[in-house]
Image (tube, rainbow, N blue to C red; front, side):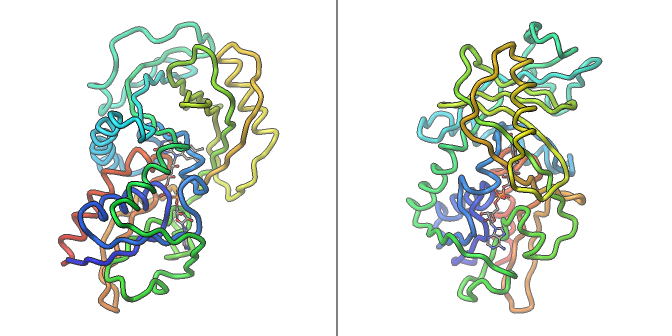
Length: 315
Ligand SMILES: Cc1cc2nc3c(=O)[nH]c(=O)nc-3n(C[C@H](O)[C@H](O)[C@H](O)COP(=O)(O)OP(=O)(O)OC[C@H]3O[C@@H](n4cnc5c(N)ncnc54)[C@H](O)[C@@H]3O)c2cc1C
């Protein structure tokens, strides 16, 4: 079995793989341009919920495997993971309950006071507070002996030091350049971070246009959002205003002040999440783990386990 592993990427996918391998006795090193909170992962609302990722027959099992790990992590207050009641709404007609959610849905009436919505459902899901969870993963990785090398940009995977006989590609949208994957599409998301909202204890989400969500975290609240095909990483002030207006309208509150704006590029891959293992001509094993779209957190532990199983069978 490969014992010396290089992971390219320090977002949720790379860090989760790092924790899993380092805690199982591998010498693991993460190389990335940015780490943790600076990445797309740091801009995420980070609710557990399968969204904007394909294909469903793989995404749902990975998501359910991740759910189990996250429920366990809730017991550790340092992790930044908690269970939150998610109220999911639609703007017209009756909301469709996805097959996978049948056993999750809480059989109670959802909040009826949001008159802008026509129907909704409620379920308990893990929420990862990215301001805590990404640092928690970094610490867990380093405690298990993993090393982090920030500000490292590779033009191609072949540039990774040959002393690593296994390379795991967790480059997110960066895989477009790194492995010339033209199937990757940047699904740009912008959010506004506002102070905690009094009495907002559950997450409010509506996927119908305009996409809207309000997610209370430990020390603040995430207002979203957008999902457009674009590479633009600059926050658009008019978009922030529209997000805050719509969330405030739904919550029936005065517009709160904006503490921060974040933009991230969801790494959506038209042909589905790329989770596959191959041998290179130089004899090195490469495992690709990217293209998780709007579900990188939701799929993180399930995908990391699949990466691990590939590495065992590639011996
Ligand atoms: C606004 C918003 C809200 C979201 N909400 C949710 C949610 O509620 N739930 C959920 O599950 N998901 C959500 N997502 C999606 C989630 O954020 C992504 O799926 C996830 O962050 C992808 O993680 P990743 O680690 O694969 O990629 P990234 O976080 O993008 O990390 C990629 C890493 O690779 C490095 N890298 C890239 N190219 C190179 C290179 N050439 N050389 C060296 N390093 C490189 C980067 O520096 C970075 O460290 C949201 C996304 C956005 C933008």
